[in-house]
Image (cartoon, rainbow, N blue to C red):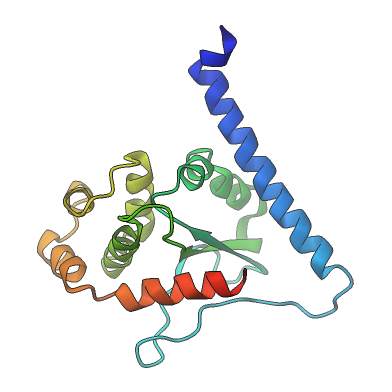
Amino acid sequence: NQNNNPKNKKTAIILTATLLLVFVVGVFWMVNAGKNDTQVIFPTPVNNGEIVLRVTGSENAIVTISEFSDFGCITCRAWNQAGIKDQILAKYGDQVNFVWRDFPVITANSPKAAEAGFCAYDQERFWDYHDLVYENYPRIGVDQLKQYAVDLGLNAQEFNECLDSEKYKGYVEQELQEALSYG
């Protein structure tokens, strides 16, 4: 039976994620068609004006794609595992970059996983941590999040103190509220 073939399921997930991305880009293009100005959405300042951007790609990019995502989201994982971001970066090089934004709404552990991403960012390993969390989906409990930091060779004490202190809880909440404000 072809419906139970894991390769067919993976292909279906990749196709669905790609079609979703194309749909979103198409809607954005149609809504903004004919506008002469460029709208760039960046996070509003938090914690005394400090902004924390988790960016990959060129600093001089002419296109910035802000991805609102959740470490507890299976579709977000499929999009990441499909390598679409990497394909876009490979195809368009210095013309594009990605900004990760947290939208932790899927699981009860999603907000803590978002905080953990910030803690990995503190040690300049956000994207490695991001990839490892998605590789181990759906395991995003606090103990697992801390183990991923160890697996990456991060300073575990620093990471654990960051995560336990809820240092980035306000950032996560602000990004969530910002995402919700866009509808």
